[in-house]
Amino acid sequence: MAEVDGDQLRVVVTGEVDMATADTMLQTASREPAGRVELDLRAVTFFDSAAIHALVRLAQRLPGTLTVLPSRQVRRVLEISGLGEQEWLRPV
Image (cartoon, rainbow, N blue to C red):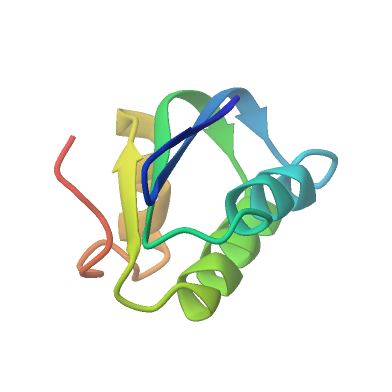
């Protein structure tokens, strides 16, 4: 689900983000021009390497404008992959 509020785009992702859905997450979050993009992953239950790759690509496309709200599972995967200290990642 994507919502635009002024210059902010909020994308809410639920369930599993994997090889079948990661590109959809990337495209949804980057299709609208926005001053700020919030990627809400708090309802994500599974996050694989394709999802990590899509998230890194999104952060590269949106430097300084991306905020990611992770679930515990997403936070753990990002920490294991060495991305737990990124400026765009918010606490659980």
